[in-house]
Amino acid sequence: MARYYIWFVVVVAGLAGLIRVLLPRRFAELQVERFRAANALNRARLRALLFVVVGLIFGALYFLPWGHQSWIIIGTIFSLLSAAETFFQAQFPTLESLVFQSRLLGILYLGLAAASYVILRRA
Image (cartoon, one colour):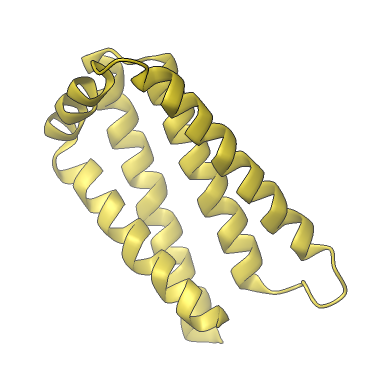
């Protein structure tokens, strides 16, 4: 199961990173449009809270006797990175700040995908 989850992170984080790095302005424009809907910012904040909770659950699993595995660390980082993205997009929903966030988070997602791939190849 761990190998499948790591492959999932490699693919999803890699695609998310590529889109954000290659098309940051277009991605930011789509986010601005998405936030124009009623209660969209509040829903984004709740989603960020959900991602934090999932990240904390993954983090807690690491400290169980069988939990010292790399996929748990990757899951924690992926969840917390998603939470940070969602939270900061909701806090700073202007086009220019979303373009900056897209570039920054794209680099972080690509870094997570690359690190996950390296861990996968070592296992």
